[in-house]
Image (cartoon, one colour):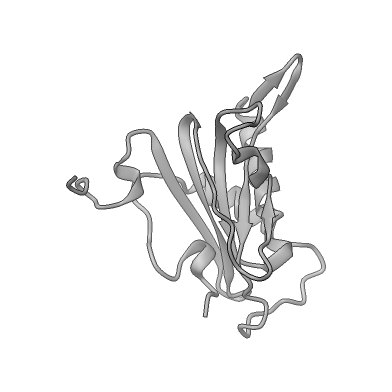
Length: 154
């Protein structure tokens, strides 16, 4: 199989990637979102994995598709980036309907970048805002490498 024209995951029709970072914090978040819900899977590795809603991705679960996936710096704090994406999706009327309830499904995973020298003395967790900004930036073109979730990776 040949790579697509950009050789990026966004060569898959309907997928977009957005990233947001805070250089002072030396961290960031990245979101993968589809024009419509999409099927995803996960393989969890490492000695101290940090995830949110990844159990939804097992094939025996009720929901067969998710609205977005989030990768974030910030260790456990970074899981809150999913909340920012959930809020933004809900505002757009996107999510899994259960009666009158609308539930955006956004699994996520984090990496540990708390000791990279960035300013981590915040009074309010910044990751929900980074998640929301990453979603607003979603498009077919995106920066790779040390951007978004990879901003503070060592």
